[in-house]
Image (tube, rainbow over the protein chains, first blue to last red):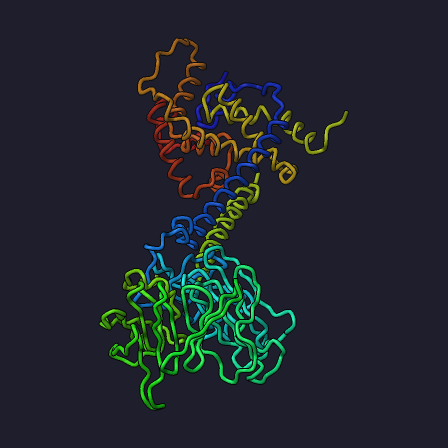
Amino acid sequence: MTTPTTLADRLRDLAEDAPSHLDGAPLWDAGRRHDRQRRVRALAAVAAVVVAVLGVGATVAWPGRDASPEPAAAAFSDLHLPRMIHAPDGWTEGTDEAGPPGVLAAVSMSTRIERDGLLGSRRSSSVFGVSAVDGSTRFLDLRGASADMLGNGTVVLSPDGTKVGYVRYRGEEVVGWAVYDTVTGSTRFLDDPEQAVIRGTDAFEIIFSGDSRYLLTNYSPSGSDRAKDDELVVWDVETGEATSAESQGHYWLPSPGSGPSGVVWSRGQRVLRFDPESGESSSERLPHDVVHASYGPSGELAYVAWGERSRDPWRLVAGGRDVDVGFEPRTVIGWRDAGHVVVGNLRGRVAVVDVETGEARADRLRTDTQTMTPVYATDLWANDLVPGTRPPPADDPRRTTVVAGVASATVLVLAGASILWRRRRVPPA
Amino acid sequence: MSLPPDRAGFEEFVRARQHALLRTAYLLTGSHADAEDLVQAALVKAVPHWRRIADHPEPYVRTILARESVSRWRRRRWREVAAAVLPDRGVPDADVAEREDLRRALLSLAPRQRAVIVLRYLEDLTERETAETLGIAVGTVKSQARDGLAALRRLLPDLDADPSVDLLTGRP
């Protein structure tokens, strides 16, 4: 035997020691199993990454949804009116996405930005609510509402803060009303089956009764446009039943008031009360022409009256006497308790008046939205006011979705590239 | 019962080329058992791609073989004990002793150096083909071959005392 001298020779010589054959292992079957396992692992890995990315995206896109309990179950003493109402960021979620907001302290309107198609967006005026619990804001997705037609008088909040009433339009015509429950998220449509289109001189002005049970409307059940054909119709928001509180025949519109129960309104020097449940009505005559009358929890009456002459300012009469509140009052807002009535003007000035002594303590309610004067849950005057909460900035939710999508696509591309790399061309022989 | 065409072709290839593959694997691993295991693993991994490589399977299988030998060493070295001092030899036959020396010298190389030496000097691949098989740059093949050869010369003085002599051909 010749001793190999070169490395190649010695390697070939050593290779002679190699085993000559494999044992009879079923390599083909093992290879098929290996292929199946490889595919399952690859799919599982990609799925896990996609789920993780989407999970992160969802967490970022909807932060804190599970972390913030709905405020609906709060005790009455935990409900507060804000001195300052901040309009929410345009991209703030609506109730369709975030659910009902719970008891509200106020409703108003501001500009909302929503997705329009894949990349576009649209702006509109939209109703938002301010939570009575934590001051957070949320746009209200009101069914059947026409945002362009809503504003002062056509969107109202019940005194207890649990219902939002609004006028439903088709085009520019009123077709009915609706009440959105801020706690349950349900909506009740209030329709006159005899009138597909609601006629009347003031069909678009609505207000809740002082006990939050009835929505007051003024329209013509006979479909007439004559002012004398209007009726004061009250709707039970729990049952949807309509009751006429004042029959047609009056030329002037009634001036709605408030009371601890039933319906209150005024005409001239008369203040009228009607109990829809019993059908009983009553009235009392006052020494002044009444703009807005309100009965307190124990039956005390306070009202804003016209001046002696048409150019004289309006005034507050409480405890049977005129009270100077430091500004011209426009409405009796509500009652802090049986001995204190709250009055205000249209610019946010308010005064809490001691009915017994006539002493007035001034305060001010502010807002940074110009679209609509806020409507407050007047029952909450019983509790202390709070400063108000500035809403957090909100962003286009598609940004997070796009980020998650790009990340997922990147993962998939990398996975595809990895597969192609592993299957790249066979090396030459 | 006749086998499906793919499977029949695969098994024909295994029958025809298993010894050649085992020879390479033996130099890469230095052990009969590991060589058999390595060849089986390479063939199993080739099955899913068989339809694509059936016309010319050997380069693909050898690529898997070489790369698997490197990656396996990486996976296994944490539990392997390096032998700084080789055990005493008990084989008096001179040829057998030379083979054992070479086997141990190969095992002392880094896995990639060993793979480069085997592919270049046993399989007779070019530097470019070696680079493609191992998935590394041609420059890396050059440096790994140089370092590997230097180590072998140091471990096997009788291999060739003159570094100017081409170890592949034995010519200056």
